[in-house]
Image (cartoon, rainbow, N blue to C red; front, side, top):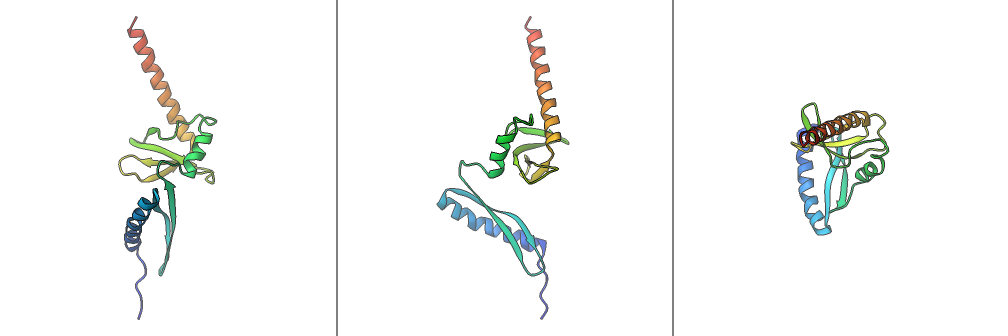
Length: 142
């Protein structure tokens, strides 16, 4: 008897079921618990489980808070617009060389990553627009 290989759809269903089970455990322990990265083969899958105390910070969020001022980046949680879509900055992946800035797309919560140069450039542009608006308002009051 030959088995069918594990499909992406089956892994997705497994993720949803596991997340539901972990949600009840998280309520009991006052934590947000979810399945992270999943890798799979024809007969197996393995998953990373991530847990954060309610009101706590992830390791990535703490790393971003430690480094953002040195690199002239916006504060954690800032919404930026990139390619006509809004993203919220969620952390810093210290092991990523090219794209360490972690962010979630606002409309669906999907995770993305980008370089500090991209975020820094957007932040600088946002700051310049704010200063121009402030100058116009101050000039209009005279």
